[in-house]
Image 1 (cartoon, one colour):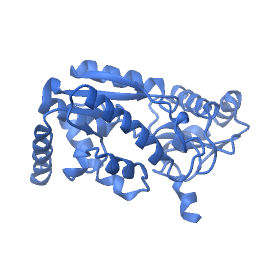
Image 2 (cartoon, helix red, strand yellow; image 1 turned 30 degrees about the vertical axis):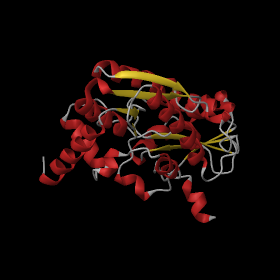
Image 3 (cartoon, one colour; image 1 turned 90 degrees about the vertical axis):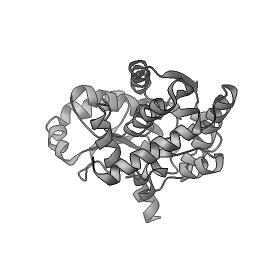
Image 4 (cartoon, helix red, strand yellow; image 1 turned 135 degrees about the vertical axis):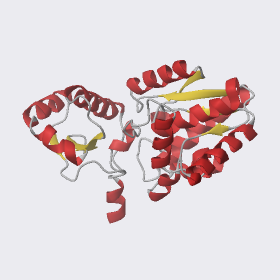
Length: 273
């Protein structure tokens, strides 16, 4: 391990020990899994992983979160948090994530207080500074801690350390809630979330080993598929099957984005505005 990364890891360990106890907001992604492992090493049974359950979080991810916690021996709680009930969420304004995070982390803070835990932690890292992330404002307002960011860790650091520690999530593709599949200003509905989730699950089953994947929903009728550029020929070769499957799910039109997957692609519409 290079000295710079070693120093960051030491800083992370020290800050976690100083907390005494904590809730870790746990999605089973790369960042929160690494954070949970480090928090558990530092705090033992004084840490609890808390996962939100809602329409915008696929059941597969809930199952993976539970399995990870069982394997790690970490206490795990699931909070029901239906975003569609949060004022300002379904309308999908540019700062939708602010309203969602404010409500969700408010519930996690209440859970922490009820269980005598000193802090709530979440897994943002340095790379999150490079994209439009209105949810970060809610995190700051509520006093939620971001230990990976505080320690100066970037995504590549977290993946490298996760591999070194043997975490199964080291090379897991990044994931964002299903609400992120809808352009700003386009209303989010339970039916829309269900169709997007089903479409992505079908694609994962039809193309084993597929990495980054998003099915963006435009106007309620168009599905725009984003995959890594290297995967585009694989999807295109079965265009008829893909179109038929997604039409059966409820989309009228099915397209394949020739630019491929990129983080925050729907923010491109905000930039043009």
